[in-house]
Amino acid sequence: MTGREPRTVYVYLPGEAASGTDARFPVLYMFDGHNVFFDAHATYGKSWGMGEYLDRTGMPLIVVAVDCNHRPPHGRLNEYSPFSFTDPNFGRVTGYGRRYMRWLTGTLKPMIDARYPTLPGRETTWIAGSSMGGLMSLFAVSEFNGCFSRAAALSPSVWAGSGRLADLILATRFAPGTIVYMDYGTEELRGQEYLLDDYLRCAEALMRRGVCLTSRVVPGGTHCEASWERQIPVFLPILMDAYKPEG
Image (cartoon, rainbow, N blue to C red; front, top):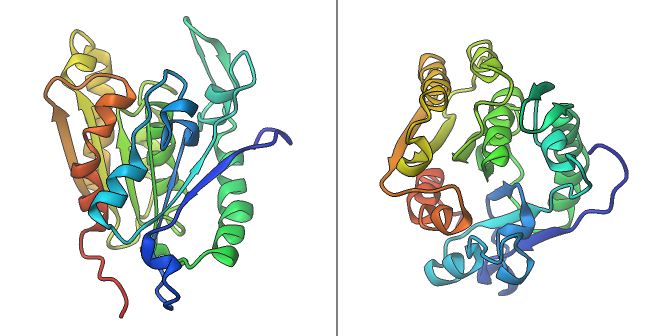
């Protein structure tokens, strides 16, 4: 957190959590929580529809989606960047990403684990996001690998920080069993050679560090919630891979 701004936290519980059983569930933390569940709350009027997908499939998963910092001019950019940098489009961005993740892991996660039927261990604590949230997901699974074992980074803003994320990944000692999904859409990459280069550097760094990586170029994929929603049936099963519900 960059201050004491109030923040909305959306929590999805699987139906089984209300059935009176002792079942406990893995937890997926997500960035830009206002865009995850409800069209009426989404910045551009279209959410990921995550709740509908989970209801339809019955996936045994808790999702904790945290609203971003909406304070102008660059509240979200500052909070969702691990690195400070200057960009010709945004000006100076102050990287509060590490501070934010310390809040999420040190304050929010203990509250969630105390209140809901979570499986709180590293193997069942995951993180996901898109755009700057995708960048933060890659940062979180690297710098906070003791907390998160799996991450999904959709259209990650790997351009932020001029390649410093790839260097951080190469310096990380990942625990065995770390799983990462990352993707970009063909329409996002069109004519953006610098973006492809940064993406490939991060993908190569993850593979060199022994991470189980799934990397995709999404046909027709664009930089919007509707496109990211279509990837849910791809990346969620990858994160759930090898997870066996208790009982």
